[in-house]
Length: 175
Image (cartoon, rainbow, N blue to C red):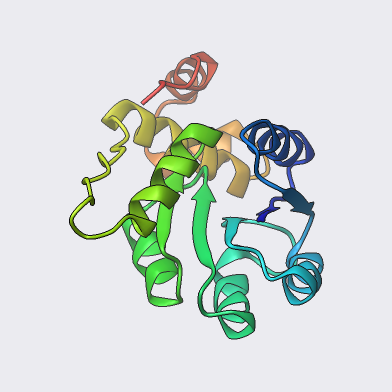
């Protein structure tokens, strides 16, 4: 059984459907409290946890899931990936860390690599985002922190307002 914990309804439902099409029993949870209730009741094999959620965030949820069942595989998914959050997630008990957008194939590949026998083990190619993708994610994060105020974000980033507008108007780089 897979538990998908994400406050984004579209992503959560899409991921659950994709996993069910691959013969997995999948359930979704909107927040950490709901995820803990489902985990206590059903003890999932795999849990996908969004890093940023209102209320209990993914970093707070991971150790509580570990207390319920130490054998479950926990993969943290985030659109705001960084080295410090990756380290923090792993220290708190996550088995794997992936940047969004992630699809069911990537998730299952990571799960299988974590559970394959040592002689069969194949290194999962690290999905390293491009510099352009990291920059775009950083700009989005700063804009969100500024409540969408482009002038304030431009000042914090040390950019001209129009330069920031041009960068934000572009589509996000794929990787």
